[in-house]
Length: 79
Image (tube, rainbow, N blue to C red; front, top):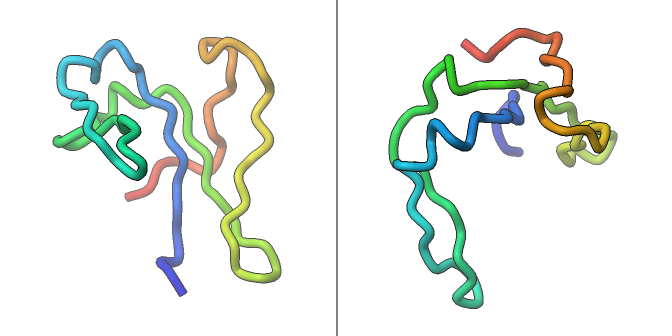
């Protein structure tokens, strides 16, 4: 089984854009990579993911709102 905690972060894409590199991944599709730590100030929202009964990670239901309107996570940030 994988780790015990998994967090989904929404980051400010404008602040990380200069450091994002698009690189080929599976099937030669481009995939964004960030080769540095995410700074606390760049985090706009967060969600602590939970596992279902079979042990799979469950993504939260996030409303289709502009990201500025999404609420901050309520579980705090990972330490």
